Length: 258
Image: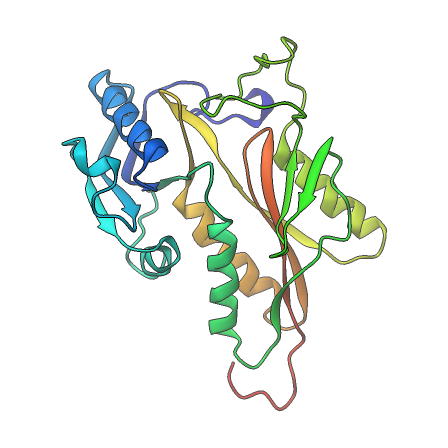
C-alpha cells in the first residue's frame, strides 16, 4: 500500500487481542473512551483493554469503562507483560505522548539479563538524522522530529499535513533506515533499525504491535549472539521519534554465562 501503510492505517476494521494503554491520566482516559466509541461503531474489535498507571485513582478509574486497570510502574509492567506467554501475537500497545523510551528500556534490560558477562549499554548516536529538529537527552535518547512547530496532541498524521497544508512527504521509519545506511557507508557498523512504528489505527488512537517488540528482542539476540553489536532502536510515528543505540560488547573467552 502507498506510503508503507498497512490495512490498519487505511481505516479498515481491525481486530486485536489485548490492547495495553500506557498511562491512565488525561491521555489514557481519552484513548479508552475513543476505543469504546470505535468498538461501538464496529470500527475495531478487541478482547480486552489493560491500562497501566501507578495511581489506582487515575482518571481511567472514574470512567466506568470495561478495562483492567493495573496499578504498577510502566517498566515493571512491561517486564512481566512482554515475557514468555503473557503477550499474544495480536496484542497492541498505545503509548503515552509523554512516556520515556519504554520499549528500548525493556530491550536494554533483556540484553543485560541475557548476557551478564558482557558490556550492555546505551551509546551515543554518531550519525545525525536528517530531520529539522533533534535533541539528545542525558539518558542517551535522541529525540527527533520533522516538525519545527507545535503539533496537536491528537494529530493522526494524515497524508495532508494539517499544519503545512501540503502533502506529508516524510516518514520517520525511513529516516531511521537512512541513518543506518549512512553509518554503514561511513564504516560505522550500526545494525537495524529496530522500529516500533506508532500509527493511527482507529478513532484517533495510535498503536504499535506487541509482536514487533518481541521480534525486536529476537533481533538483538541474534545480532549479538557471537560478536559485538550496535543496534539502532526507535519508537516513532511518521513525524516524531525517540532513538537509542543499544551496544552489546564482544564475548570474552572466559565467559561461562552464555
